[in-house]
Length: 227
Length: 249
Image 1: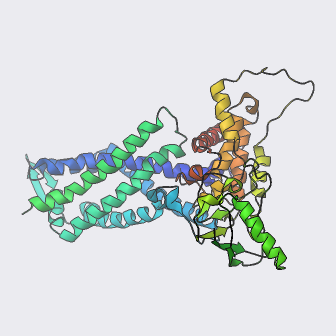
Image 2: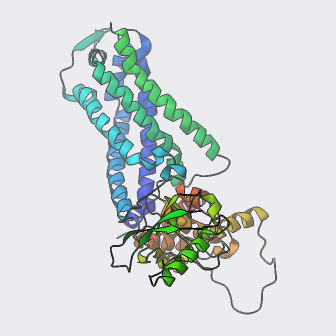
């Protein structure tokens, strides 16, 4: 084993990968939510469709999207490694355990929250991302140029109440996952300092409420304005 | 006070073990938790039964020998050592569940006694400093700022009881290891072995089979000495900077 693999196989190294991929996914979510705010523009989806074309054709964005795929897969694979390792560290469990007295619920259930988010992600990618890349998408023309009318797909999809409900509920789970993950990633990187940590905690709390709330508001907005 | 005690009994490491229920009558609220168990053991001995085995030594809260997972928390409901826990923390008629620390790296020896030698091996791996033999050095020969000395002393308060491992949902020993890494990394005397220490102590911690950290903060909340998880962040910094810059392949 070289020093690199030895480090990445240590508990600290695995945690480092969780933190780095997690932070990159936080960056991705920030970009994703900002771009999708164009859904609120009320222009029949023109800005959104033009933005979507830019995001799928720009080479820099392409590179970022590959990093996102790697981060998602890395985050999942390493969480499985870590969970297995952590479970094996306590072969006999306690008969009585009072975890709520010393730690937050979300911090003890990141795996459960992550699994729910993964299920959501599969539904989400299958419904929009896969359709955008390989499905039949109606075209629309703005100023003489053809665009995929993804806005139409989004607005059709969110006419279904169950899908809107799934999105909103999933964002609650995402919020709880982020409520621990945001500050936790900095702690794992070793960035715990009395000057900065209070600010990181505050930003993390705002982030874990604001971003999922904005995401959840999109299907709700589209659902209630489509009538 | 009258209490019902649900105590883990296990003959030896190979035995499967199980809970046995005892009734403790006439418990004074001024007794310490261990004194309450002493009385129970006297009664068991008089009846010719095997007394309940549990670890204890100084009974002053400074040695780290006592353990016990009481009602779902290490060292019971107070943030202290079990020897400093008093029966006034419980109410009359209560059922108290007493279990040993649970971790692969802390195998049960008998009843509530677990083998915490894994901690000793982590210390042996790098929790030391090299000193020159020869004449006695002058006091304050090496200047150390008050802030740094305080931080090092805060970390050095760790008594190695293992409550952090017991409290952690992953049975992780990161609070212990990080306190031991920190107390030496902060001081000038600890600089010689600084990088090797972080690498070796983390490697030993992993080799013992302790879990990884999920940053729940349960260890910090249960530590009888109030060791902060800022030490874990420091250990992570020490470790990551050591692996990229040390001469150890």
